Length: 219
Image 1 (cartoon, rainbow, N blue to C red):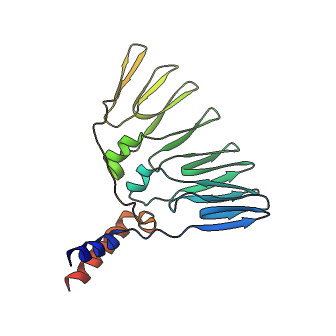
Image 2 (image 1 turned 45 degrees about the horizontal axis):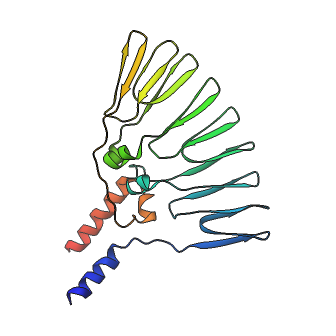
Image 3 (image 1 turned 90 degrees about the horizontal axis):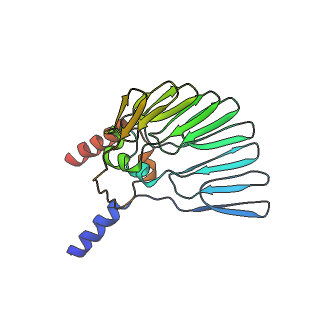
């Protein structure tokens, strides 16, 4: 009886992972998720959390990192693909300007343009595991033609440096810049991956649905 109850509990906790699909086009076949095909290209994302986009006959696909999957932002985990001209990129917080496109690798990353250079920066996975949706948004700072992104950024006339973590610190001493980041002592171990449909929802929607389920269970 106990084994039966445990088996039911495990099945109930198993996320609803959609089945893999395959797509064929012009003698090519790809299998995975969010598959797209053009006249001469066919690709799929590797996980149900990923996405694919097609621009000018070229298919681009992207899969979020495990840290982003297990710690989605409050607005939901929604990677995107953008394209302009012959350029295409997939990820988060994409920036399209000056005929180029770039995207951050995580929903907590930032992208900026400075003197024609498009730069994206992402916090380390250890910070995403530790803080998740509470992770402060990084900033970017410039100095002449230089640009850097991160936390507690400091600059001189020609140089700019940033800490890599929210607990990091940068100091400016005359014309010298120094940054330090304390090591992360967190050990983050995950079990089952979250339901792909759930992590796409905003936190407010997930909370409302849980409250409704709790009310139904209490009746």
